Amino acid sequence: MKTRIKEYRARQDLTQEKLAEMVDVRRETIIFLEQGKYNPSLGLAHGVLRALRAAIEDLFIFDD
Image (cartoon, rainbow, N blue to C red; front, side, top):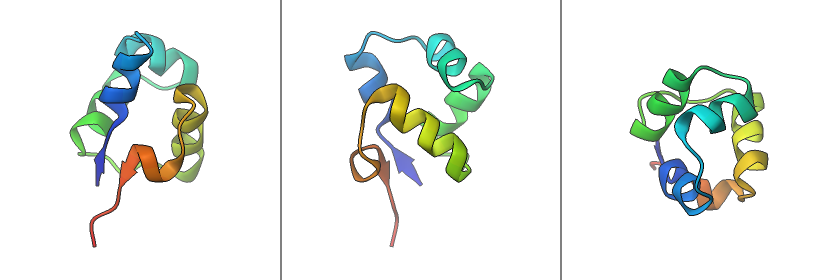
């Protein structure tokens, strides 16, 4: 799955570390999400969406 997490995070001038703190995960988790190497749980996705104030369809790109 591809994401626009990095783009949205940059718009808000957030570091990976700060976003990780906001979502209560490790920085590595944010790195893997941004690289599309990790599919988040529903709870994690919800936390990222709230932290970045984004809609799911704007942040996550689902492959058909």
